[in-house]
Length: 281
Image (cartoon, rainbow, N blue to C red; front, side, top):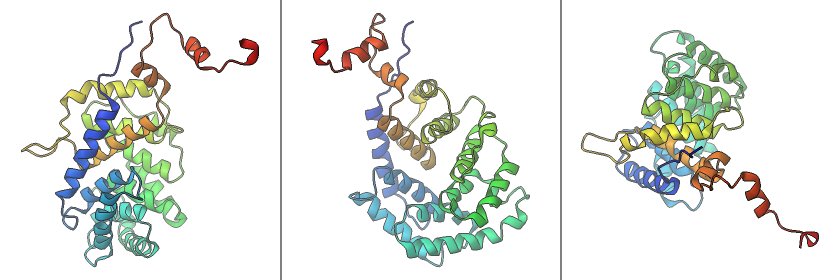
């Protein structure tokens, strides 16, 4: 069988996405766009928080916003506050953020069945799950809310599934409901889900990366006059998926990147790499 090789290069894609993340966060006013800034900071943190001056610079600004009186006035502040609380290493700032989020949630849970409730937004729910996974008094309420709201397009369901996993659930039955991704947003979100939660979400990673490969020529990562094609969230999810694949390559993808002659089998390769003992010489 002729191998179906991936056309893009992981290293080049990583560098291209990394550069774009740096450009975008430099152009954002964190106080005006806290959620976009928080997602890009999450992406920067994937390269490590220490000895990462760009991350440290903008993290200080996000922490300053999270500690201000302005942060927490709007229900949609839950997501950026949660990401900030998840990323910060400063206990006093985390405590302030958790207090603000709890106050916001107190006014949300009684109205959870309403269509425009903030917990109907999977982005908000996933972000808060990152921070509150160890708060048992809130976990059960959030889990129940997710199961009530689990419907809609694929990218929406992916974030709800990710939130459940963060909260300690194994939503195998919900994972099975995911349909084949159609849009760019769907493909990236499904790819991210399988890479981030490999031990829980089983699937053919090569096939999913091949789906991304087929749409990659249509993705404009860099901003245009009309604005960026990928949202800051999708850019971040793509970056995490790429980094995780590069850190722990899927065997099928690894063999695709280094195609072998059809007559050379995997067992031949393994024998070639196995050190010979004295008796073999």
